[in-house]
Length: 147
Ligand SMILES: [Zn+2]
Image 1 (tube, protein in one colour):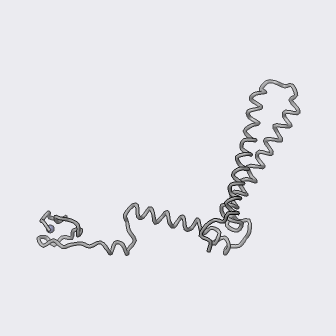
Image 2 (cartoon, protein in one colour):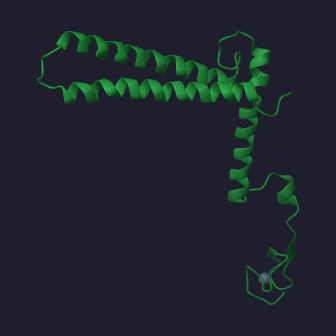
Image 3 (cartoon, helix red, strand yellow):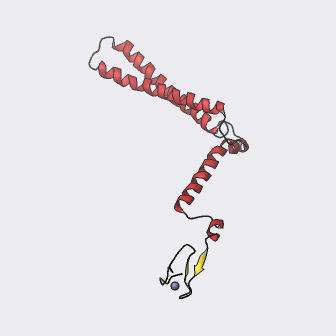
């Protein structure tokens, strides 16, 4: 099972991201030019054509870039381009692993510990009250008697 995302997919991801940025800039540029030329109706028709082309092209680039980026990130099957659940599982494996790792990190952070670890905690019994204290405690956590 692949533990890492292949170079090809990484390349596709960044190419897609680049297309999205380009598309976004192209799309945004139509607002800039229409602001600059606000109220100026000379050569209106050709500018409207150029604006429309850039707005449409920018939007198309955004969509295409998004698709390529998604395929790069999740693979052909993982992103739903190919209907192949077995392959999708393999392709999404780095993500499942990441999610699992993040849950594990969170548990460690919260010091909850998973079963096995909790069993390793050694408690000592107080001679005076019989209450349990952590092995590292110098005084009973129940009554305060020196252990
Ligand atoms: Zn005690």
